[in-house]
Length: 271
Image 1: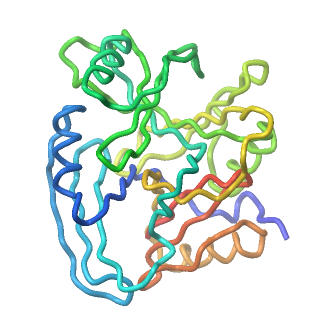
Image 2: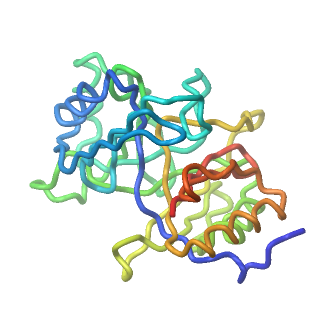
């Protein structure tokens, strides 16, 4: 059974969570402050529930949250922490990509070589904090000189079948096609942006190389989309199940679940 496009409730992008082990939380916050110029803002701790003894989260701005847990059991919401990298790249624009790349190398941060990517930009991947969570730097020399070292960009998602994935993301996440560059191997999609009704978030679907894995990866770094109505939230979960989309159970009082696209890329849905 396939979901009709109009039956999928409206979803809005609400930022990213970086899952860090409990004992490393403060050190990770300091890492982002030191190397990316972010600043800790709101901090919260919450007590025991059916899944966790304790939860902690720190907001670093730009919709970025560091989250840590002391679990009672092994809940499905946690990262797997395997050596397999997912195909989702959270990109951050920086004015002088080569200078940042060189500085990270000198400081012993693991980085890839510079490489050309979507939009005609150059990129490099780097692994943040002692736990090695992957983020992606993107060069953009149009950024103002007085801007922060890193500013938000788009999210790149590797897919094996570009056209099929365009259709899938349109149908099941409600993304709108902004531009297609089929010869270059990517498409640009838009999704509504939480707290900013006149703006959108931008996503790039890019064709994976032949032989890329399709394993479902529960990365420590993952995007969140949100909806607010409880009934619509439950209905959406049912639509996905009935349509054959791989989804998790709901966690904690009907507040959270995640889904995977056909290439194993994970999205977390929060109410």
